[in-house]
Amino acid sequence: MPIPPQAIHTDCDGLTLDCHIQPGASRSRIAGEYDNRLKVAVAAPPVDGKANAALREFFSKGLGIPLRDVRIISGETGRKKRLRLAGISASDLEKLC
Image 1 (cartoon, helix red, strand yellow):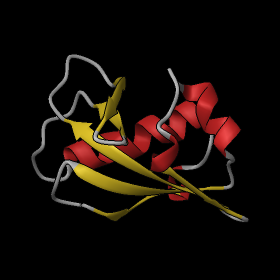
Image 2: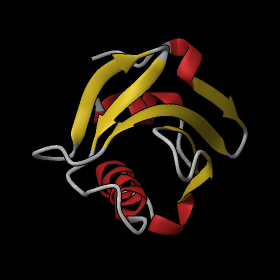
Image 3: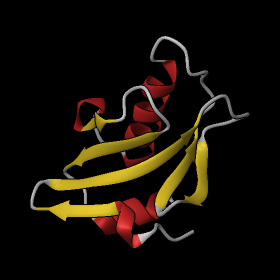
Image 4: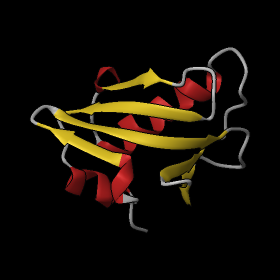
């Protein structure tokens, strides 16, 4: 499943990724595209930061990078989030999808 090109912003240290989050799903997975963002379903509920933690863990485990290299840089309380993924390229991210 291709990632919308508008959702990825690369630089020399990694990339930022625009996501639309669907909390409370049956399992965590890439769910497609929504509004030029990568749609990600997470199994955790949107309570007490659990969905944010599940999102970070999903990308950390899926990409094989430390949890500290996955940060939410905007959208902590909403469905639209921007993630900072350090030390990876867009082609690394494509492998997850």
